[in-house]
Amino acid sequence: MNPLRRYPVLSSLLRPFRRSQQKTCAALVAALCQVAQASSFAIAGHLSCLTEVQFGSALTRLYRFLRNERFDNWLLTEQMLRLVGKDQKCLLLALDWTCWQDRFSVLTASACIGTRSIPVASSACIKRNLARSQNLWEETFLRLMVDRLRAAGVSAIWLCDRGFHRVAWLKRLVELEQHFVVRVRVKSCGKRFSASLLCASFHLTLPRHFDSSPDLAR
Image (cartoon, rainbow, N blue to C red):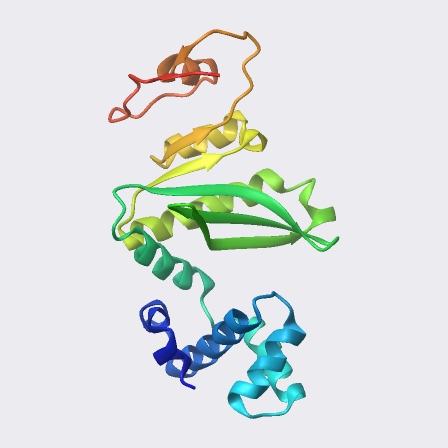
């Protein structure tokens, strides 16, 4: 089975990569789709059947690919943004933290397409290191994502939960000229705030092209 023929979308996603990287990545994605679980042993087991090699060789191939620094993950993100955003006037990107096992925290950006959420980028760090560098981690991730959005020619609206309700984060979004919706805590129940008044309360300045006419309710 040729994964690039069975899953034509992979040909578009992987076009900028070297042929050898295309073949390996396509085989791993095909194995992942077949086993439907993020388990290295399960993926390697199916990969060994697809490629007719020993299980140990397939597992080594998987780990070697995941450690390959020459494979540009952010280029793959750009390709995914270009693909999912081509028919969207403004792509909805949900940003959130999740946990992987007990050791890692993973920051993930997912494109909201209909009723589906498609991860387009992620960044993992060891939990114990996150307490002193979470803000820097988030802002670096945002800058890299914005670079790829611009390279792909895609506009986005960022959807952020209460964990991103901080002045520095909102300021960074404004500076990068990004549209966003951030869930905030409003102490005065029942009051309504315009976008300009809300940003003024955070000592932010709205871009000149920003539409501040709709009110933001609690």
